[in-house]
Length: 470
Image (cartoon, one colour):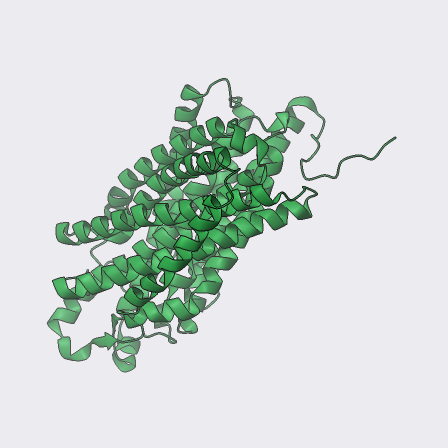
């Protein structure tokens, strides 16, 4: 906010950066400036916390609901018969980090830099970004299904051609419908927050996290069940894939209205594809654990653990990205952020506004997880462990996950900026995908450690190979 006011007071000192479409200051003036701490920014720990807490809790309710839904859906015939569908859950649910959270971050940066204040420019930015998300959803949805099939083959499962067609069609249709619904919602939230004078960086990504899991899981269950019931039809699933392939060129033409979006369309595929692959590894862990009795409750807690970490790191990444767009020039870090590899102490303990927001987000982890754990325990008391030891291990896993992700966000954004890459597009997918893998892996370790402390015998890992004949 203070940076925008400074630009209004001295417009001759600031210009538009065509590569990103955001404001920047000349190098000489930036070098002479001081870091935007309390004297230059109106945001304080209290203001950040007051804006983030309510959307974060709202997101937690959505994540808790998603966990309960996944626990319910895992017993549906389509999930029990098609094991690869469970592997598909984290990468498809994680698309909110790859696509919707990235979209929310881009639009928040555009809002904070004044790009969408003009109605004509607003329409161009919004339509091109929504078209881009549709293209990305169709392509990544198909790649996620292929990755799930390959991971199933690598783990010893067979390949059925009909089930593979059902999996691909379900993934593409779910990803596209979820991207359309959530993308439209993100546009409404960012534009509304801009008009109300609220920083959309603080509220857009939590709301995407809150509804993304619920919408995606529900769509996946309904769509895959429909295709599974009609799997004998030879033309249904191929027609769905061909139809979305035919719509892709039209979306590409719409996306080309905006030069920054064209840049993403050409060079922005590697982050979301790599993030999808990382999330798929978390899906493999989830697939192997849900059928094991010692992992009772894994389906309920996995969306919460992964969602909370991805939610908080997306907020921090979006904030740092906006901060750099306002105060820096791509390829050159401001003086107060000159270290490309900051220490954890710098990430959490300095006086910069980004460290303040990191502390606020870290403080939310334990009370947030306690609240969500209580809700799940109340609604699914027979399905989840409630011993004090498990609760402590669960909270420790959540704290470790978010601490690692917040520090990596600080490092990743600086490295991307030094390479003149837009952090909104290149960092959030990596970090949310890594959050899925870390969350699922740490949660599995929680169940294993809880079994060890309760029985004194380390439970067998679901990833261990099956014993041979005696």
